[in-house]
Length: 282
Length: 282
Image 1 (cartoon, rainbow over the protein chains, first blue to last red):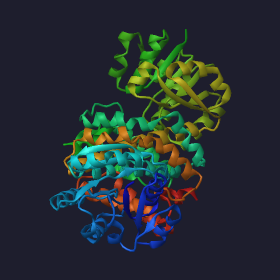
Image 2 (cartoon, one colour):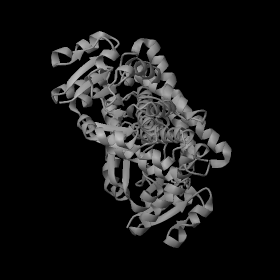
Image 3 (cartoon, rainbow over the protein chains, first blue to last red):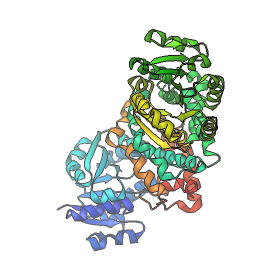
């Protein structure tokens, strides 16, 4: 059975460790705030005093850390003690550029390293259900792909280009934040009009707007700006939305109004709403 | 067979008229830009010289007009000639407050009036497939509900409260715009990182983020801000997104960063991302 080191046992990391322990793996854990690592002891994890101590015996080293700077620092502290035949897998959400540079640097140093961020909630990490995206050398991926699959059910290998998993993770999270901002603005309009937030949401039972990400997105990606929803009309509706919010704070609609104005000023008024992306699609 | 008047034959109105003509209804059409009405003549529509001329013989008067001001003006011009037993159905996207006042005013004047906006593309109006929401007096709805159903397949009667269909229409459209803005920002990040827009969209084949509208929305509506995605971590990811765009113009992410900062400043840093709506949920 594999010896695993897990560095960073916050909400996501600790769920992943729980699932590993349940699968019978031996896991040494380290976390900056030690209490979060200690919480995994009753489940069978061994708490290490430092990242270097955690990795010494490991076949696989997993990281789930806050950002690029922390990943680089913890790698610097632990790499001298990582076994030459071990694989290091970083699940952290990091920058595309920083990740690309890290993968290239570690590959040159002979470290077997993958960037493998996930789309999962803490509960999903415990249940080992979700999606993991992987960037890094093919031979490293081939060596651990089947093990990674046990963590999520689905693993999507994006190839050797180092920044793709990082970029795709940001794309997915950005849409999640955008939806959350959109819900906040629906609630703002609902409040101003005396409508309960739960009632406002019933619209999305009847109108499955999520389907439009693919439909509208693919049309936009083709630079097809022929109008199915004329931008000028969409701008008029946006005015109605801003007025309907009646001073309640808004998150995303004001930025949309501004981009619509910019696109109309650039001559896209009779084009489709999707022309708000014309500038970034040039 | 019913005599119908249709006022406003733009992209949406003309599609609805096409479907009515195909069903064998007699339709008198009027449009401010006459050529758009004339385009329906070969299909069997009768072009009227004015809104008043269009409505004279009609059992049902349909409107699909740009905004509240135009709806009020066209109603003023045509109502004196609308038959006492006719029903007037306005499909325009109008303001919740303006619509409520209009419904109450017309009800007092003895006009049978419904506000019935739709979620449909121009193609869907021609195919008579989509969703129509209806606000207005129950007895008026009962008289025409089955006829309206032929226009969309699905009709959702929201009751006598006059502003609900208008508000729900804005809620749905706002989320459509928000998704479009989110796609634009994904494309901005993709461009800055040398990723083709069509490739960037493949994330949403694997990560069906649209499902989160209901999941996250209902949690937020319950004012449940317990963290499944900690706001402080989401703010960190948003920083990575802004940096990843590398100066490409963004539509919605800067507004999201700002609202996250506000919510963190109000003490929501350890709460869920959904706490960006805490202020409008008070």
